Image (tube, rainbow, N blue to C red; front, side):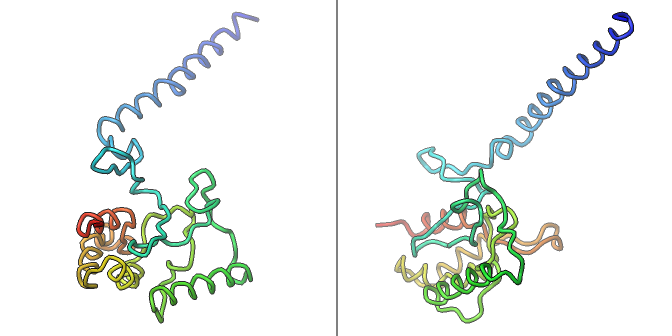
Length: 191
């Protein structure tokens, strides 16, 4: 009986080594060699080398001089360990109340009439690092006032950090909140 199951045991051990160890190590090695920044989380570092965030994961900005991201339903907000959407349907009263509250806050802070959908709705993961150019432009006056610069200067930074659709037709144009806020800090440093 042992002679009959020995080939199966050898095959299981071989496939375990091949698919459980060799393949993951090979894929990790190739990723590190070809795409090291992405393989290490697309971390964004400051001039002193400290990690300021990831260009792929949203984070909260609450100060008036910064672009604000779209709302997050991930835990206490932008919690990668609790990544998920709210799972609230379009007729849910809690969702309607949260959207109305967000819209009221945005109108009070940014003086907006029409508000882009991404300003008051969460993404599927709750960690979206990007906002629409319309939502970014909506915030330009507040940012300019807080930083004491002309609104055109802030709009220029937003335009420079607006990325078009992939291949010109896949997806919508986006503005990465972290990268734009870093560009704002570089162009208009705090005094």
